[in-house]
Image 1: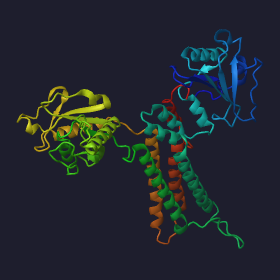
Image 2: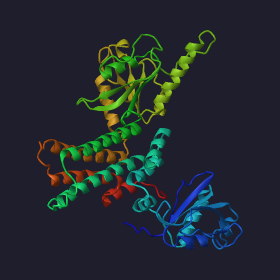
Image 3: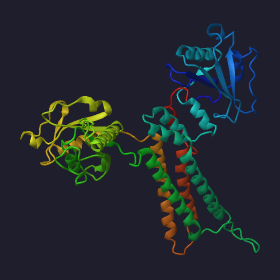
Image 4: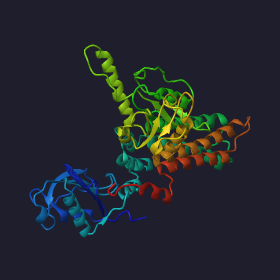
Length: 475
């Protein structure tokens, strides 16, 4: 692991046109480098707050002996955290510049000339974690913020970054630590009886089992909260939508795929006005994705005074359908055999599957697929339905919506809960006999370690490498 006191620097914003760009630096010798880089607005020597003062945003100018000779009187802001209260547990500076990639690069190069080195990916987040300013879940949320594709994903990542779930998990871990301390105290001082003394604590089923049950309930609550946040209410499952023009058999195909009549089917355009969703299972009965039947798109009624309400409903249904397509992981683009497939749906999703519907009404041909992997289907005869199901399963199996942080958190909670349930069962089987305190303490410590690995309270270097290697430089 690199030194945690080296002077490091990195751009914290992408080198592209913007109103402002940011360069971040921290480490030993920071004050001396800042004094060589900048002067006050009146050209007097730079005055930085001491370690006992609050962070300060300072308007500065480049030193004439540094970048000032070339870049002149540019407006530059220096946000400086003087010491332990800062985000990294040490002095850290953030230089806010006009949004210029050459200027940002010149500043980084100048700081390196003064003795700093370019930070490695995730090194700022790692220092913040090692200083106890953030836990491992918050550190991983930094990656999720950078990688967010939608406002919903950004909101979830920012919420994770605020530390809500991590604080709950750490609080439960502390609760278990106190419980183990009581149990181990009872073990260590079990024989310390005198006429004037009593055991340190009373270890029995009635005293311990409700506390373990409470922790299990809280872990279940955290797991449910995690599923709701990461999956928009669908547990993180990929969304697969059936999309295409009205009245081409999407709803019939949807019902055939899910194995029951959920969507309303009529031989009339516009029957489906809103989206309908159902979970799609594989052959082993495992839920693989959420399948969504959409209203038809692309054939809106012309707005007229004769049927204003009908037109408004059609327009609204089309808008909802297009929004669902944009947030889908996979689009099953449905069209008719005699109609040329329009590729507009391909641009709205990372993955798409082209399907011809109602092939039984088009011709009595075989189950061969059309060009470019298009699948011919019939909801009436079942032709091509299983092939489509396999294609959907193969496509969604390659989609990993869970972040590594979510995966670790889910695994840690599951492992901790398993140990706690084992402890509960052992207590329930005592039948009036005093419980085995040593075994109970071991099981609780296993749960404590599992939760500690989630938040980083107990963590190996291999996990640190996996977490922070995914971070950008400057984060």
